[in-house]
Image (cartoon, rainbow, N blue to C red; front, side, top):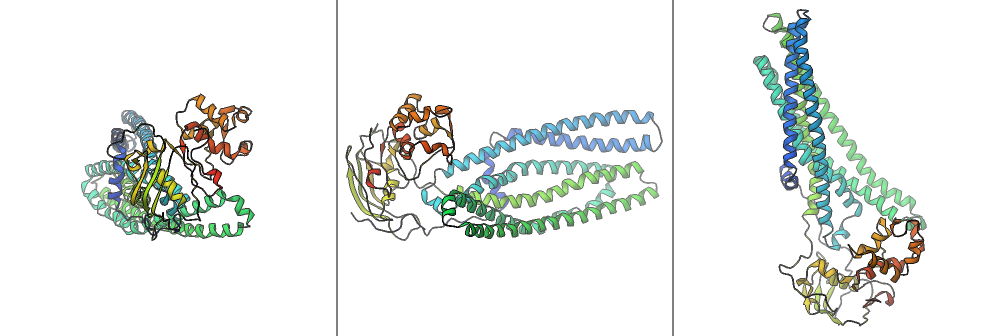
Length: 534
């Protein structure tokens, strides 16, 4: 066999790039995840419509109260409109509470669904994907970017509907009071849209820069704390602080620029609103002086404008928010567009439980984007009960062989067979039920001792868990823990010091009763076929 010594686990030439997408494309990509929530979103919209109608009626009642009661000083004319106004206010408050509560429920449900969807997809991606993405950046995408998409898909839809209906009702009421005055003031409304359009491109760019920088900061912190012993042993505190400051500087610049852009937009819109209000007051004063308008009508009209401009302004601001959220959607779509390196066969091969004969037949493989082959023409057979040790320098292909056996990848040429059946003909989940990887790193979950032992075999019975602990020489120690098998375990906790590394590494092997294949740089006794007791 000829095994090339290329560094199979280092840098590969292929790179993933973040796509640039318009907001409507990103929206269509994630809208299907609202399936099952749409009827609740419809109820939120209904509540929004009723709330806007209630506020519109309240303003009209205010106009009536002003002209009939306040202007004439009549207490008897006060009670009927006042009682009606109070009833409308109570109805509006109840509807707004129901709508906002339901919106919050639908919003958080969408976030949970999206996060689960992305996390499930990420777990299917090949190992080289994680070597090209910093872990902290992936964590940032699974948290902040997911919430940004919620703003784009759910909050954005609800907010748009609320602003549109409110603006329509207030505008209709204003036209009903004085159509000529309303037409004169609405001429300035497009200025809000022009202002938002002017700032949208810059805000999207700076939002993208900020999210990238935030992911980089998370990565530096995660890498430094994850290797804190080496950081302290090698005196890298100053170097790590410089790394953090470098990434934090990029985030600082993006954050300050974002604040400046948003503040400039807010102040520009405030000036536009002031011009509109002054125009209304000036025209209204002239109308009152000619006797064509009452004070109550002017106050009501001004109130309608006071209620109208926030939705109009909100629509413009919502456009900027959605534009910024699109930057997060682009980063998440980059991950979702990466396809798993292997798929299940169209038809399952009914082979039953394998005997354990493993054969690599003239296998050649090159990692995606790599310049050199990791394996070339590799052939060997391992029969049940045989011990085979794979040795070689770093990069010789030992890890690649283990990845082939677990079907993280399929060979470019040749076949990997189990009992004569090509692995590509076996469903991935069923294949991995029969193969155990014993890496150098110890996998410890933040869960109970019982859950850690059963992690290699979900759904294992209590007896199987105890048998695994006995076989790993950990049962007596576990019984001495405060809560026995229900004791919580922290991956970084000193509680593990009483359990040998071998014992924790063996828990999944014994509990799963699998055949094992391990590829590692440890001495030969760590690379065994079959494992003891199998």
